[in-house]
Length: 175
Ligand SMILES: [Zn+2]
Image (cartoon, rainbow, N blue to C red; front, side, top):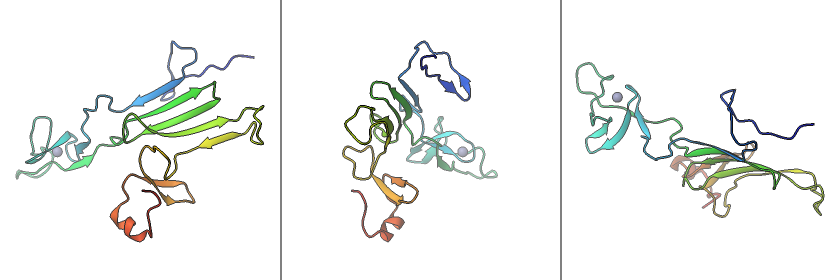
């Protein structure tokens, strides 16, 4: 028999790690908070809003990839994954639990999804069971508001509910 050693695998490639038993792995998408959250649909350049419209890194508001000689502005679209601060996997052998967390709001916090094994000697009928803990609407200190979209599938709206949906709902499920 062998002891349990976690293996870090990135895009299918095992990564050499110094620590025999890493406890925490995290992917940060914009650790310095400097990345643009919009880019141009036509030329692909990162964009920032200015008083004259969307501009690229050189402050140019004219898009080289759009139009046919006449001035054409950049067309800003959200950068994919720019809504995510980080995603992490945490292994806690003492608590016998694994947590996956995704941060989309305050970067110091995250939505946490944990599976924990109840100890065999716990004074509970759940002894030996695996329990899944998930974020839920109205949770104290929650990372961002959650509103159920379809209770059958466990899908939630994160943050503000679109006005068109809000009108159809008799009341919000979470404040
Ligand atoms: Zn452009």
